[in-house]
Each structure stands twice: as structure tokens, then as C-alpha cells.
Image (cartoon, rainbow, N blue to C red; front, top):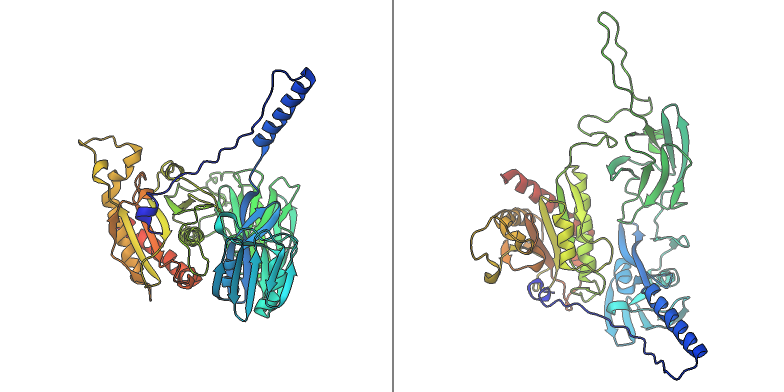
Length: 517
């Protein structure tokens, strides 16, 4: 995909549905009433009808030295995954042969053959019969999750561990951590105890009135996905690893509570005290000995360098990250089947975590999951937050060099320039008021990209990128490549490469803020 032309050619598809019917004036009254009832029922069914794919989520493939979140699609209540993405996660696709109703994939010593809407899949000399058929929505070949359990042992020659109904699978000698929870009342709050099977280095964060208790870098196999409590301080604790980072999300029943985490037994037990704030300290009487209130012995209050997550601080500056494409708008496609929409979502997620780790920013994603957003929806999501920066991620054909990165700030078409100077710039051309700052942001990011070993970074330049035109903030487009039908996506989907890009963006943003007036 080449951003400057593909975005301008983007069109909206409309699907018209009609119900042909005929009512004759000579029909008997009873038949007329029946016809009207049938038509009303048909109209009601159209109003209540929803597409087969109801929502999107992530499925995590854990291996000994890696983890990969893949987009999980639910079709007719069955869980599906993109087969090319699965195979390239656990190995490398040699070649593919795609026809209108069939797909052949050469993977190592095995040839895999799928047929559209068929439950039978051939893997080498074996014929597997799945409970659900193969699908191909929006040109992407999908297999039910059970394909992984049935086929991966033969394809990878490794042991597979999977809990039925879960959104994660463990391949090879992966020993996932397990944990158990209990909630106990205390004199002025509650104590959450997390008993882990292995030592965990605790890390915490807070966002949107919830606390996050990270469970280290080990893969985790939860016994339950969610734990609910009849407790006046905590209503729910939910396990989440949708971004590949295992954590517990603690939801308090009310605001204004303090959160004190700690560890015991060498890190195998995580403790979190959820306490009511102490009453305001009174001035000591002159000549008497003042009493100093201390935190519970199991958990010292956070240091000044690490503010207490439970106490709201000053509002943080907002950074908006925009993952281009989504849903049926897949964007560019690599030879190994990786789609631009998935690659941009991965880059946005990595950058989000890197920014949040600094504790200096709030981060907003314009697109969460595999959904389709038009330019107006992305602009509204960004402009209503008044961000300090807007970064749009793209991927496409940047030539034979890979990995390669190019960064652009907006250049208006001549027809978009205001005829006369004005203090009021319409939203449609909001970027015109930020073009100098956008240019500085692009240059700052480009300087940091050049420091990534093995990456070819182009000089920052200007272009009429449609996704930047109406952003009321310093805004840039970051395009990684090359992503095309003649090259594999391996250099771009590497977790280390994506982390280096995210780290460079954080450093570039810091440099930009330091130089901005």
C-alpha cells in the first residue's frame, strides 16, 4: 500500500437489502393479514440481524522465547485464527498457492491444503476433520482454533498445552506460571493475596480508576479468567494478557482508595492492600509528642519518585496513536500473508506500552481491535482529547530494503490553502495551524530512527497524507516497509524490531517536547 494514493482512492461500500413482495387487492382478508404478518416478521428479522463476526479479540501463542498476539475472530460462536499468521508464528511458510475456493501452503516438510467452507483439512498425508469449516472473510483464510491442537504437534514436532475455551496456547517446553487468589478483610480495607507457583517481580500501574498488577515476564496459565468478590472495597479481579503481558486488573468498588502492593516469601506471594485514606493529620499540641501514622507493615507507601497509583495526580499530556486500516480494509499484504492492518496494530500497541512505561503520558488508540474506522472517526477521537502529538502507523512497499522506515508530516494541496489569513481554521484543515511543529516532530523521530542498527531511515519529508489533514495537533505518519507480495514480513514483525521502533518514538517525542516552546 502506498499511503498517498491508496487513501485518496478509498471508497465506501454500501450493501442494499430488499425484500420483494406482492400484495394483490383481490386477496382475501385472511390471506392479506397473513401476508402483512409475514412481512412484518421479515422486517423485524432484518432489524435484528447482525453479521456473523460479532467481535474481535486476541489469541496468544506462547513459545519458549517468544509470544505472539494474533487477532481472534468469532464467527457463528466459533473461534477462528488466520492460518498464515499462525504458521509464520511457529515457523516459516515456504510458498502458497491460492485459488478462489482453495489454499495450499508449503510449511517445512508438510503440504497443507484447505478448501473454503470445508471442515476437512489435509496436513501432509493426514486428513483432519474439524468441528467448524474453513472461512475466508475479506480475503483472509481462517481456521478454527482446534486446528492448532490437531495440526501443530505434527507441524512443529513439539508438545502443545491448551486449556479448552482459553485464548492462549503453549508450544514446546514452556512452563506457564499459575496462581491462586484470596481476599481478606482488614480493619480499614481489604487485602488481596496472590499465591504464584514461581517468583514474580511485581510492577504496578493505574488507569481509568483501576489498578494493574503485572505478573512478570513469564507466560501465565490462569485457572479462571475473572474473580468476583462480595467485598466493600474490591468488586472484581480479572486476568488479562491480550497484549502478551500477563497482569491482574483490580476494580475497586469506589474511588478515593489507596493501593499498597508488596511481596512475600521471596516473591512467590503478591500482596495488595486496598485501604481507606487516613483522616487528615491534626496539628500536634506544643510540648507534646506527635504521633506519626505508618503504613501497614506488609506494604510501605510508594516513594516520591514513584507516585502512589491510587491518588490522582495532575493530568498527563495525551498522545494519540493511530493504527491505519482495519476489518475489511486490510491494506498491504506480504508474501507470507501478514496484513498491514495487523502490523500497524502491533506497532501501535508496542508504542503504547513504551509510552505508558514512562508514566509521563496518557495514551489513546484510535482503533482497538479489528474494526473499520473512517477518517472522521479517527479525527474526532484525536481532536476531542487535545493531544500533544498524533502518530499514524502505516506499512507498504518501500523498495527492496527491509526493514526501512519513512516519516511524513502533512503538506496541503494548493486548493486547501486559505485564500486570506484567518484566525479561524475549519476542522477539515486543522493541521495547517500545526505544520511547523509537525515538521519538528517528524525530524525528531527521524533522528532517533537512524540510531536503530540495521534500519534504513529516510529523511523526514512532507506529503498530502489524508489521515493527518484534520488533526488539531502536531501530527506525523510513520510508514515501515517493505510490505509487499514479493517479500516476507519477518524483519517487520520481529518483536525486537518493533520494540526498537517504539523506544525510538518515545525518545523522539521527549526530544521534541524538550525543544518545543
